[in-house]
Length: 143
Image (cartoon, rainbow, N blue to C red):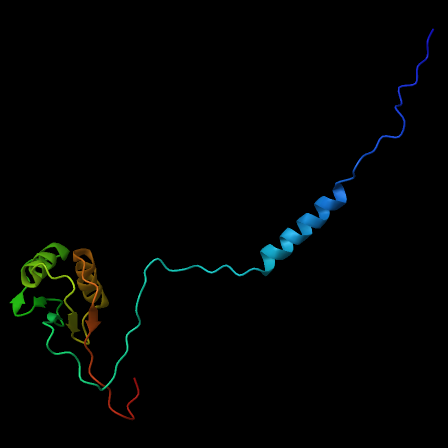
């Protein structure tokens, strides 16, 4: 009977458990200390106001919204409800010029949804130069 020794001598092995512990600790450190910035999809330009003269030579399209939610594009009243008739009236008055500046003049008591609907219609048509008309507040008056 032959008895053999299956040992090949000293086997060399790398213990990776401490390496895994260190890597997981570093990973948790970087995940917990990093800041996650969520960027908005819509790029906006914040408005500025000054007392300087504005360019009055550029033809401006004006959309007015009264207290009851009726829309007027230029001097034409929008007939019909919803965004469709508003878009048709804007397209008819603006023609093919989508770089034209547009001013939205809404009554102070107009529901916010009506202003958003006008901005949505302008955005769908491709207008990018929008402004909302306001009146200056009285000095010393609180908002």
